[in-house]
Image 1 (spheres, rainbow, N blue to C red):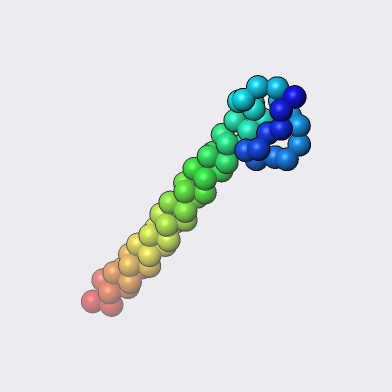
Image 2: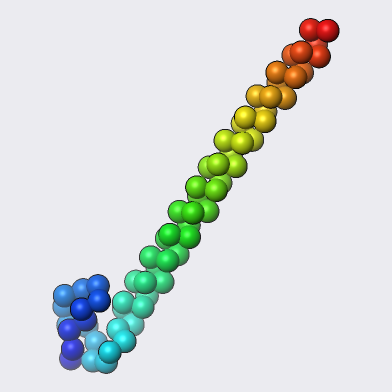
Amino acid sequence: MNICNEHKSEVVYETRNCPACEIQDDLNAAREQTDRVQEELDAAKAEIEEAKGEIRDLQQQLNDR
């Protein structure tokens, strides 16, 4: 067997392309994508809360007239 130098220091696979490393790369890519989507979701939630506050302010202004 050959030593996988990509992500691990143990003997894992006989050929050049280690399937464990490929899976790990896929998982890391999925994690990064999930993190980006979560950031977008958090930003959207903040925008919604800001819009709700603006709506409350406008409703109060209309009620005060």
